[in-house]
Image (cartoon, rainbow, N blue to C red; front, side, top):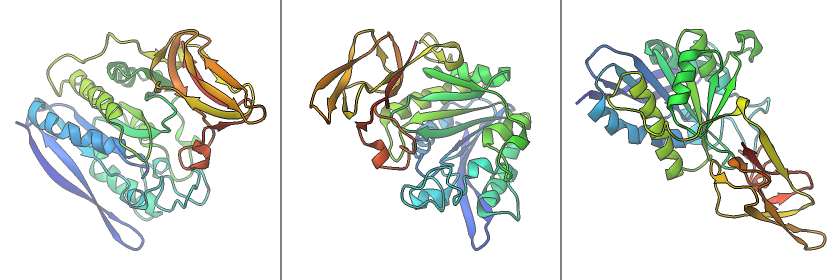
Amino acid sequence: MAESSVCTVNAQLTSQELNIPYWRIDSGVPGPTLLIMASQHGNEVQGAEVIRRLLPVFERELKAGCVLMVPFANLLALQNRRPHANSGPETPYGDPSVENINRTWPGSADGTDGERITYALSQNVLAEATHVIDLHCWPRTRGTTVLVHEGHEEAMEMARCTAVRFVQPGALRPLSDKSPQGTSLRNWSIHTGRPAICIELSGQYMVVPKEVRRTVRAVSNCAKLLGLMVGEPEGLDEPQLWINEREQTNIVAPESGLFAVLDFEPSDRVEEGELLGHLISDKTLKITEVKAPVSGYLWRYGCFRQHCDVSLAAQHPYADEGNSLAVIVH
């Protein structure tokens, strides 16, 4: 068995010392070092459970290289039970009053508390890594998706190997295009020669077992691709949709009312003409059946509006005319 231990990153903040624990699993055999990071945002908790489930897998099956797993990258935000350490109730992600630590990499030893956290993580765990998987969560109305920088072939191969239904490629941003504090972990990793992907699980403020199982498989597949574990990746025969190569059909509310969903979940396949839910008009009480106009996979399902990741009101199933009710990728 591989040797595992609990290590600590010490971050010297402006008014306190913050100790961030992480697992280190070492095979004792030369090979890549994979960093798996979770909970950069305090409401994105599913990645920590993914890491917990991966621990015995790597302890048992790691054959080469090393794995570093940080389940609680932003302890202050986790303890605040909100996206950022200084988020208030229903504060949007991008509110200028909050600090998003995933815009502060590689951080600064004498900067803000967020910059000091990412500096400590950069110096103590990222510096050792050769490959990076950053685990995030977006709203439950959107399907699990791998984010990857297009044109970076090794990272794109990691994305393919996850066997996650959706992949969303994007251009590598110049460092100057991001906030003055820094950039994202994925962007900084690529700029410093480390292939990196981000997996956005479906659902915040909660742990969804199906999502966790899907992501455990995805990370295990990447470990097999990198030669850390033996065996063949699972699920590569399942359809994988690269968003930039596919058409999207957005289904909108024909009038205002309450949209009641059925038993579908994001990432599910639907067939043309299949019933997705009912819209109950708040003016006439007319009931409209909302059906899939095309066959494909649900990338988004349920009323979606901005800030639904932090605002209970924004998660409400009441739809204004023209609001998005579902997006099918086909």
